[in-house]
Image 1 (cartoon, one colour):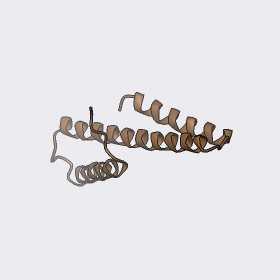
Image 2 (tube, one colour):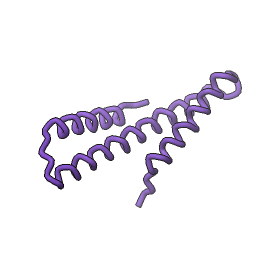
Image 3 (cartoon, one colour):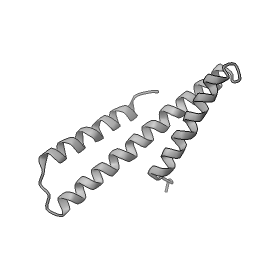
Image 4 (tube, helix red, strand yellow):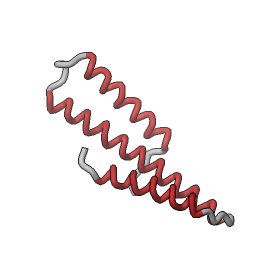
Length: 94
């Protein structure tokens, strides 16, 4: 079984990569272009993971809402649209 980061862990990782990105911008030339590309790819992948976790949480909340009798079609549509956008983003290359 693969460990799945919690939303808080994903947010901390995103902050870490944002700090790396800022350091890269502040100290251009510190890293080689391949290292900079690896950092950029890691940042993009981390953002995609965070978006998927958020979308999955929204889907779970919507399903729980239906479990307890909510039949709002607007909730279903907005949640599905949100999930579809996150999935499409995750499928694209960084």
